[in-house]
Length: 364
Image 1 (cartoon, rainbow, N blue to C red):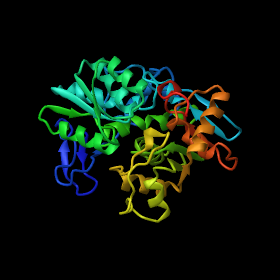
Image 2 (cartoon, one colour):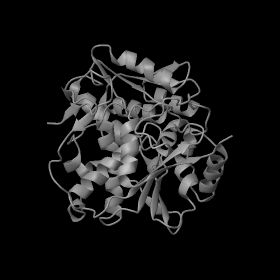
Image 3 (cartoon, rainbow, N blue to C red):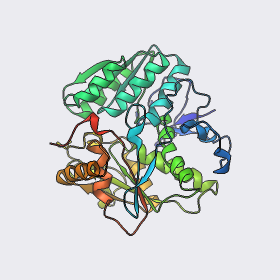
Protein backbone atom coordinates (compact mmCIF):
# COMPACT_ATOMS: atom_id res chain seq x y z
CA UNK A 1 0.00 0.00 0.00
CA UNK A 2 1.32 3.53 -0.75
CA UNK A 3 2.59 5.56 2.19
CA UNK A 4 3.33 9.23 2.72
CA UNK A 5 6.98 10.07 3.31
CA UNK A 6 8.58 13.42 4.03
CA UNK A 7 11.46 14.12 1.63
CA UNK A 8 13.14 16.35 4.22
CA UNK A 9 13.25 14.21 7.36
CA UNK A 10 11.91 10.77 6.40
CA UNK A 11 8.79 10.97 8.57
CA UNK A 12 6.14 8.53 7.38
CA UNK A 13 2.34 8.37 7.61
CA UNK A 14 -0.40 6.09 6.39
CA UNK A 15 -2.36 7.39 3.40
CA UNK A 16 -5.58 6.43 5.17
CA UNK A 17 -4.96 9.21 7.70
CA UNK A 18 -6.06 12.82 7.20
CA UNK A 19 -2.51 14.02 7.86
CA UNK A 20 -2.00 16.68 5.21
CA UNK A 21 1.64 17.55 5.92
CA UNK A 22 4.69 16.25 7.72
CA UNK A 23 4.01 16.73 11.46
CA UNK A 24 7.71 17.39 12.10
CA UNK A 25 8.64 20.02 9.49
CA UNK A 26 5.15 20.91 8.17
CA UNK A 27 6.41 20.32 4.64
CA UNK A 28 4.61 18.54 1.77
CA UNK A 29 4.50 14.76 1.48
CA UNK A 30 5.97 12.58 -1.23
CA UNK A 31 4.36 9.22 -1.99
CA UNK A 32 6.20 5.96 -1.46
CA UNK A 33 4.62 3.97 -4.24
CA UNK A 34 5.68 1.11 -6.49
CA UNK A 35 3.71 0.55 -9.69
CA UNK A 36 1.90 -2.77 -9.82
CA UNK A 37 2.91 -3.50 -13.39
CA UNK A 38 4.35 -2.06 -16.54
CA UNK A 39 2.91 -0.83 -19.79
CA UNK A 40 3.52 -1.04 -23.50
CA UNK A 41 1.92 1.04 -26.19
CA UNK A 42 0.32 -2.07 -27.66
CA UNK A 43 -1.19 -3.10 -24.32
CA UNK A 44 -3.28 0.10 -24.22
CA UNK A 45 -5.43 -0.73 -27.25
CA UNK A 46 -9.10 -0.91 -26.37
CA UNK A 47 -8.75 0.53 -22.88
CA UNK A 48 -10.96 3.22 -21.34
CA UNK A 49 -10.40 6.53 -23.11
CA UNK A 50 -9.33 8.50 -20.05
CA UNK A 51 -6.22 8.86 -17.92
CA UNK A 52 -7.31 5.73 -16.03
CA UNK A 53 -6.05 3.66 -18.97
CA UNK A 54 -2.64 3.88 -17.21
CA UNK A 55 -4.03 2.27 -14.06
CA UNK A 56 -0.97 0.06 -13.49
CA UNK A 57 1.17 3.11 -12.69
CA UNK A 58 -1.42 5.00 -10.60
CA UNK A 59 -1.76 4.81 -6.80
CA UNK A 60 -5.55 4.39 -7.07
CA UNK A 61 -7.63 2.13 -9.30
CA UNK A 62 -11.26 1.43 -10.20
CA UNK A 63 -12.48 5.03 -9.66
CA UNK A 64 -16.09 6.07 -9.24
CA UNK A 65 -15.33 9.82 -9.28
CA UNK A 66 -14.13 10.08 -12.86
CA UNK A 67 -15.55 12.60 -15.34
CA UNK A 68 -13.70 11.08 -18.29
CA UNK A 69 -10.65 13.30 -17.78
CA UNK A 70 -7.50 12.94 -19.85
CA UNK A 71 -6.61 11.83 -23.40
CA UNK A 72 -6.48 15.40 -24.67
CA UNK A 73 -5.35 16.05 -28.27
CA UNK A 74 -1.76 16.72 -29.32
CA UNK A 75 -1.68 19.22 -32.19
CA UNK A 76 1.32 20.60 -34.16
CA UNK A 77 1.76 24.38 -33.99
CA UNK A 78 5.02 24.63 -35.96
CA UNK A 79 7.44 22.16 -37.46
CA UNK A 80 9.01 21.59 -34.04
CA UNK A 81 6.51 22.75 -31.40
CA UNK A 82 3.27 20.93 -30.62
CA UNK A 83 0.53 21.77 -28.13
CA UNK A 84 -1.36 19.44 -25.82
CA UNK A 85 -4.88 20.77 -25.43
CA UNK A 86 -5.51 20.28 -21.73
CA UNK A 87 -8.00 23.14 -21.74
CA UNK A 88 -10.41 20.55 -23.16
CA UNK A 89 -10.65 18.75 -19.81
CA UNK A 90 -14.04 18.56 -18.04
CA UNK A 91 -13.45 21.72 -15.95
CA UNK A 92 -11.40 23.38 -18.74
CA UNK A 93 -7.93 23.02 -17.18
CA UNK A 94 -5.18 20.45 -16.66
CA UNK A 95 -5.87 20.50 -12.90
CA UNK A 96 -8.51 17.79 -13.46
CA UNK A 97 -5.68 15.27 -13.74
CA UNK A 98 -4.76 15.72 -10.10
CA UNK A 99 -8.14 16.75 -8.71
CA UNK A 100 -9.74 13.45 -9.65
CA UNK A 101 -7.06 11.65 -7.61
CA UNK A 102 -7.67 13.83 -4.57
CA UNK A 103 -11.45 13.52 -4.75
CA UNK A 104 -11.28 9.75 -5.27
CA UNK A 105 -8.94 9.39 -2.29
CA UNK A 106 -11.20 11.63 -0.17
CA UNK A 107 -14.26 9.61 -1.15
CA UNK A 108 -12.59 6.46 0.15
CA UNK A 109 -11.58 8.14 3.42
CA UNK A 110 -15.07 9.66 4.03
CA UNK A 111 -14.02 12.91 5.74
CA UNK A 112 -16.53 15.30 7.25
CA UNK A 113 -15.42 18.02 4.86
CA UNK A 114 -12.95 18.81 2.06
CA UNK A 115 -11.05 22.08 1.80
CA UNK A 116 -8.84 23.39 -0.99
CA UNK A 117 -7.04 26.61 -1.88
CA UNK A 118 -6.35 27.88 -5.33
CA UNK A 119 -5.82 30.83 -7.64
CA UNK A 120 -8.83 29.42 -9.51
CA UNK A 121 -8.31 26.36 -11.69
CA UNK A 122 -7.39 23.84 -8.99
CA UNK A 123 -10.32 25.10 -6.95
CA UNK A 124 -12.80 24.65 -9.79
CA UNK A 125 -11.45 21.16 -10.46
CA UNK A 126 -11.64 20.09 -6.81
CA UNK A 127 -15.15 21.57 -6.54
CA UNK A 128 -16.32 19.62 -9.60
CA UNK A 129 -14.86 16.30 -8.53
CA UNK A 130 -16.12 16.70 -4.97
CA UNK A 131 -19.56 17.30 -6.45
CA UNK A 132 -19.15 14.08 -8.42
CA UNK A 133 -18.12 12.26 -5.22
CA UNK A 134 -20.91 13.88 -3.15
CA UNK A 135 -18.40 15.43 -0.75
CA UNK A 136 -18.94 18.80 1.00
CA UNK A 137 -16.25 21.17 -0.23
CA UNK A 138 -14.94 24.63 0.65
CA UNK A 139 -12.54 26.42 -1.69
CA UNK A 140 -10.37 29.35 -0.60
CA UNK A 141 -9.31 31.83 -3.31
CA UNK A 142 -7.52 35.19 -3.17
CA UNK A 143 -9.38 38.39 -3.81
CA UNK A 144 -8.92 39.34 -7.43
CA UNK A 145 -9.46 35.79 -8.69
CA UNK A 146 -11.17 35.76 -12.10
CA UNK A 147 -14.97 36.10 -11.63
CA UNK A 148 -15.52 33.31 -14.15
CA UNK A 149 -13.48 30.93 -11.98
CA UNK A 150 -15.33 31.85 -8.79
CA UNK A 151 -18.62 31.48 -10.65
CA UNK A 152 -17.59 27.99 -11.73
CA UNK A 153 -16.63 27.00 -8.17
CA UNK A 154 -20.02 28.11 -6.88
CA UNK A 155 -21.82 26.39 -9.74
CA UNK A 156 -20.37 23.05 -8.65
CA UNK A 157 -21.90 23.57 -5.22
CA UNK A 158 -18.76 24.35 -3.27
CA UNK A 159 -18.64 26.97 -0.55
CA UNK A 160 -16.39 29.82 -1.66
CA UNK A 161 -14.14 31.71 0.76
CA UNK A 162 -12.57 34.84 -0.76
CA UNK A 163 -9.46 35.75 1.23
CA UNK A 164 -8.15 39.33 1.42
CA UNK A 165 -4.58 39.49 0.23
CA UNK A 166 -2.46 37.35 -2.04
CA UNK A 167 -2.08 33.66 -2.85
CA UNK A 168 0.05 33.06 0.26
CA UNK A 169 -2.63 34.51 2.56
CA UNK A 170 -5.15 32.22 0.87
CA UNK A 171 -2.97 29.16 1.44
CA UNK A 172 -2.53 30.10 5.11
CA UNK A 173 -6.30 30.36 5.59
CA UNK A 174 -6.91 26.98 3.97
CA UNK A 175 -4.20 25.28 6.00
CA UNK A 176 -5.71 26.61 9.22
CA UNK A 177 -9.02 25.07 8.15
CA UNK A 178 -7.23 21.84 7.18
CA UNK A 179 -6.05 21.39 10.78
CA UNK A 180 -9.65 20.99 12.00
CA UNK A 181 -10.26 17.27 12.79
CA UNK A 182 -12.26 15.41 10.16
CA UNK A 183 -10.98 17.59 7.31
CA UNK A 184 -9.40 16.32 4.10
CA UNK A 185 -7.10 18.96 2.64
CA UNK A 186 -7.33 18.53 -1.13
CA UNK A 187 -4.08 20.38 -1.67
CA UNK A 188 -2.60 20.22 -5.14
CA UNK A 189 0.67 21.33 -3.52
CA UNK A 190 0.97 19.21 -0.37
CA UNK A 191 -0.76 15.98 -1.38
CA UNK A 192 1.39 13.85 -3.74
CA UNK A 193 -1.61 12.01 -5.16
CA UNK A 194 -2.14 15.16 -7.23
CA UNK A 195 1.31 14.75 -8.79
CA UNK A 196 0.56 11.14 -9.69
CA UNK A 197 -2.48 12.47 -11.53
CA UNK A 198 -0.57 15.13 -13.44
CA UNK A 199 2.06 12.59 -14.52
CA UNK A 200 -0.55 11.11 -16.89
CA UNK A 201 0.08 14.17 -19.09
CA UNK A 202 3.42 12.63 -20.04
CA UNK A 203 2.08 9.08 -20.32
CA UNK A 204 -0.37 10.40 -22.91
CA UNK A 205 2.45 12.09 -24.82
CA UNK A 206 4.42 8.84 -24.74
CA UNK A 207 1.46 6.88 -26.08
CA UNK A 208 0.49 9.42 -28.76
CA UNK A 209 4.09 9.65 -30.00
CA UNK A 210 4.31 5.89 -30.40
CA UNK A 211 6.40 5.09 -27.34
CA UNK A 212 8.75 8.05 -27.36
CA UNK A 213 8.86 11.59 -25.97
CA UNK A 214 9.90 14.94 -27.48
CA UNK A 215 13.33 16.45 -26.89
CA UNK A 216 11.84 18.85 -24.36
CA UNK A 217 8.64 19.35 -22.40
CA UNK A 218 7.83 22.96 -21.50
CA UNK A 219 5.53 23.68 -18.56
CA UNK A 220 4.40 26.83 -16.77
CA UNK A 221 5.57 26.70 -13.16
CA UNK A 222 4.07 28.28 -10.07
CA UNK A 223 3.71 25.54 -7.47
CA UNK A 224 5.20 23.13 -10.01
CA UNK A 225 2.54 20.40 -9.96
CA UNK A 226 2.63 19.72 -13.70
CA UNK A 227 6.43 19.85 -13.83
CA UNK A 228 6.84 17.47 -10.89
CA UNK A 229 4.26 15.12 -12.40
CA UNK A 230 6.21 15.21 -15.65
CA UNK A 231 9.42 14.42 -13.77
CA UNK A 232 7.73 11.45 -12.09
CA UNK A 233 6.50 10.08 -15.39
CA UNK A 234 9.77 10.46 -17.26
CA UNK A 235 11.62 8.77 -14.41
CA UNK A 236 9.15 5.87 -14.37
CA UNK A 237 9.21 5.41 -18.13
CA UNK A 238 13.01 5.49 -18.21
CA UNK A 239 13.37 3.09 -15.28
CA UNK A 240 11.13 0.58 -17.05
CA UNK A 241 13.07 0.86 -20.30
CA UNK A 242 10.11 2.40 -22.13
CA UNK A 243 12.15 5.44 -23.23
CA UNK A 244 15.89 5.52 -23.83
CA UNK A 245 16.39 9.09 -22.62
CA UNK A 246 14.57 11.59 -20.45
CA UNK A 247 13.49 14.84 -22.13
CA UNK A 248 14.66 18.20 -20.85
CA UNK A 249 12.13 20.01 -18.67
CA UNK A 250 11.77 23.69 -19.59
CA UNK A 251 10.14 25.57 -16.72
CA UNK A 252 8.45 28.85 -17.60
CA UNK A 253 7.63 31.64 -15.15
CA UNK A 254 6.26 35.15 -15.51
CA UNK A 255 9.11 37.65 -15.23
CA UNK A 256 7.04 39.51 -12.62
CA UNK A 257 6.95 36.48 -10.28
CA UNK A 258 9.97 34.29 -10.96
CA UNK A 259 11.46 33.08 -7.66
CA UNK A 260 12.41 29.68 -9.05
CA UNK A 261 14.04 31.11 -12.16
CA UNK A 262 16.06 33.46 -9.94
CA UNK A 263 17.19 30.58 -7.72
CA UNK A 264 18.05 28.41 -10.72
CA UNK A 265 20.18 31.13 -12.31
CA UNK A 266 21.97 31.68 -9.00
CA UNK A 267 22.80 27.97 -8.76
CA UNK A 268 20.79 27.66 -5.54
CA UNK A 269 19.13 24.46 -4.33
CA UNK A 270 16.23 26.34 -2.75
CA UNK A 271 14.58 29.75 -2.95
CA UNK A 272 16.86 32.71 -2.39
CA UNK A 273 16.51 34.33 1.06
CA UNK A 274 15.57 37.69 -0.47
CA UNK A 275 12.69 36.30 -2.55
CA UNK A 276 10.26 39.13 -3.25
CA UNK A 277 6.48 39.08 -2.65
CA UNK A 278 4.27 38.36 -5.64
CA UNK A 279 3.91 41.25 -8.08
CA UNK A 280 0.97 41.79 -10.40
CA UNK A 281 0.98 39.52 -13.45
CA UNK A 282 -1.52 38.41 -16.06
CA UNK A 283 -0.40 34.83 -15.38
CA UNK A 284 -2.28 34.53 -12.09
CA UNK A 285 -2.03 30.73 -12.07
CA UNK A 286 1.75 30.81 -11.63
CA UNK A 287 2.07 33.89 -9.39
CA UNK A 288 3.53 31.89 -6.49
CA UNK A 289 6.38 33.67 -4.66
CA UNK A 290 7.30 30.81 -2.28
CA UNK A 291 6.34 27.38 -3.67
CA UNK A 292 6.60 24.73 -0.93
CA UNK A 293 8.18 22.19 -3.31
CA UNK A 294 10.84 24.61 -4.57
CA UNK A 295 13.78 22.27 -3.82
CA UNK A 296 12.16 19.40 -5.71
CA UNK A 297 11.30 21.62 -8.70
CA UNK A 298 14.82 23.00 -9.01
CA UNK A 299 16.33 19.52 -8.68
CA UNK A 300 13.96 18.05 -11.29
CA UNK A 301 14.82 20.70 -13.88
CA UNK A 302 18.57 20.28 -13.30
CA UNK A 303 18.44 16.48 -13.40
CA UNK A 304 16.61 16.63 -16.75
CA UNK A 305 19.18 18.94 -18.31
CA UNK A 306 16.49 21.57 -18.62
CA UNK A 307 16.30 25.25 -17.77
CA UNK A 308 14.07 28.09 -16.59
CA UNK A 309 12.73 30.78 -18.93
CA UNK A 310 10.74 33.90 -18.07
CA UNK A 311 8.23 35.88 -20.11
CA UNK A 312 7.11 39.48 -19.88
CA UNK A 313 3.55 40.74 -19.66
CA UNK A 314 3.76 42.00 -23.23
CA UNK A 315 4.91 38.56 -24.41
CA UNK A 316 1.95 36.98 -22.61
CA UNK A 317 -0.49 39.37 -24.30
CA UNK A 318 1.03 38.74 -27.70
CA UNK A 319 1.10 34.97 -27.25
CA UNK A 320 -2.57 34.84 -26.26
CA UNK A 321 -3.56 36.74 -29.39
CA UNK A 322 -1.23 34.66 -31.56
CA UNK A 323 -2.74 31.40 -30.32
CA UNK A 324 -6.25 32.78 -30.79
CA UNK A 325 -5.33 33.62 -34.39
CA UNK A 326 -4.37 29.95 -34.77
CA UNK A 327 -7.74 28.82 -33.37
CA UNK A 328 -6.87 28.30 -29.69
CA UNK A 329 -8.44 30.56 -27.05
CA UNK A 330 -6.32 30.03 -23.95
CA UNK A 331 -6.14 31.83 -20.61
CA UNK A 332 -3.13 34.01 -19.80
CA UNK A 333 -1.22 31.49 -17.68
CA UNK A 334 -1.77 28.83 -20.32
CA UNK A 335 0.00 30.81 -23.05
CA UNK A 336 3.23 31.35 -21.10
CA UNK A 337 5.06 28.39 -22.63
CA UNK A 338 4.11 29.34 -26.16
CA UNK A 339 5.43 32.82 -25.43
CA UNK A 340 8.71 31.30 -24.21
CA UNK A 341 9.46 28.61 -26.82
CA UNK A 342 7.12 29.13 -29.76
CA UNK A 343 9.94 30.28 -32.03
CA UNK A 344 12.35 27.44 -31.17
CA UNK A 345 13.44 25.28 -34.10
CA UNK A 346 16.36 23.40 -32.55
CA UNK A 347 14.31 20.94 -30.46
CA UNK A 348 11.02 19.07 -30.65
CA UNK A 349 8.98 20.59 -27.81
CA UNK A 350 5.48 20.10 -26.43
CA UNK A 351 3.72 22.95 -24.64
CA UNK A 352 0.52 22.62 -22.60
CA UNK A 353 -2.44 24.84 -23.38
CA UNK A 354 -3.64 24.25 -19.87
CA UNK A 355 -6.62 26.51 -19.29
CA UNK A 356 -9.48 27.81 -21.45
CA UNK A 357 -9.59 31.49 -22.38
CA UNK A 358 -13.18 31.73 -21.19
CA UNK A 359 -11.86 31.44 -17.61
CA UNK A 360 -10.11 34.81 -17.73
CA UNK A 361 -10.93 36.58 -21.00
CA UNK A 362 -8.37 38.42 -23.11
CA UNK A 363 -5.42 40.10 -21.46
CA UNK A 364 -6.03 43.78 -20.88
